[in-house]
Amino acid sequence: MKKRIAAAAAGAVVLALGLAACSGTSSSGTGGKVELSVWTGFTGGDRPGYAQIVKNFNASHPDIHVTMTVQPWDTIGQKLPSAWLTGQGPDIAAPSPDPNAIAQYVKTNSVLPITLTGDGDSKINVDKLAPGTVKEFTYGGKLYAIPANFASLSLYYNKKMFVAAGIDGPPTTVAEFADDAKKLTIDGGTTQSGLVLADNQTIQMWPILQWLEGGDIVDSNNCSAVQTAASQKGLKIWGDLVAKDGISPVGLTGAQADSLFSAGKAAMEINGPWAAPGYKSAGIDLGIAAVPTGVDGAVTLGAIAPLAISAKTKHPQEAQEFLAYWTSKSVQKTFSTTTGFPPLRTDLADDATLKADPVVSVFAAQVPDARLYLPKVPNATQVDSDAYTTMIGQITRGTDVATATATAQAAINKLTGCTTK
Image 1 (tube, one colour):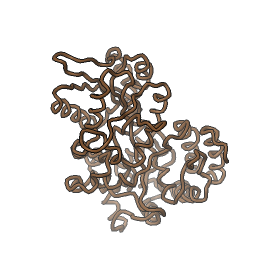
Image 2: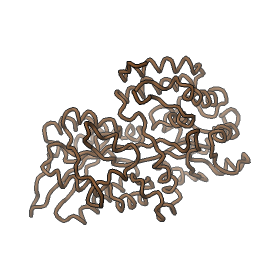
Image 3: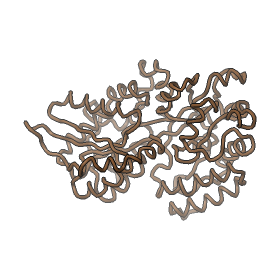
Image 4: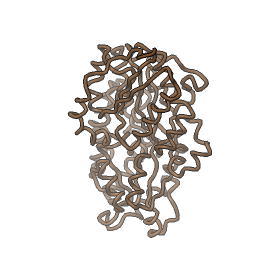
């Protein structure tokens, strides 16, 4: 889910606080039926898909009843830590759209280690989940959450603009990507942007441009990697395209970038599956393609939110059964066809039904090649806001890449606690 979706919902915090006091860990209801409560922040267009999962689970599990409460992420972030510490919170929750947030709940012993793993629909098939997700939620050899969803980013393009520019189809290589962005920019970007690149209040897309050249933000030691030759190459290519060639306005939020593409003022944008319905309703002659292939092959960014169980739930077995159902193959297939999101499993990329869907097929095909942004990096939120986003803002405004990355390197290493470089 995009950060800006959460931000847009923040205005509903006061209303959400009126949703009553914490529901408390649930108990058996009448007739011995187990009652489970779930909090999520899925307020966007994919919300009906999650509601359908709950509805279908309740219908197929007569001895368990799940109630899902949807609240803004900010509200959950305020209420859940203390609620889970005192045992008054929900049995299950998606604590945050930031996967790194689960670490704090592990530190406070607020989340239950998940043990119902293995093969079959009745268990969580961890070996089938999207790349990096199991590692992201594993601490001390124990799994503490599963991905609530998985969204890969793809390349949206305006077919009409491509035809007008004499370009046959979407770019498939980095060189074509950069070249097309220039060709599709009209009047220095004042009439038409070739590629809108948001750099704040958005799901990050700039890391993809570094990955395409073999670069990264941090290395395996959580030390800065923005100063490497590969990273600097990617940053310079796209930084110059913005600062010198005007392929994108500078300093765009995610919402502003979306608005430009939706208004027919931009030819390309990197975005997630949530954007497709809005662009189609706006009348855009829409094409969706995989992110062009980089020097090391196909790569894109994958975004996930965690789904975890309270350590104080009275029904750990039933709660894990719900997570197993949520991540099962058949449920994820239905969720994808309903919402347009790719499944959070890797064994559905070749599914005939999903491949026949022009939106889902593109996003689902990229799940095996998706990488998480700053996975398990200490102070990841601050690394993003205080170092990385600041660096992109400097480069796109003409600051020399070497200077900008040197400053970012110092900030990143201080935040992550890197001492080896």
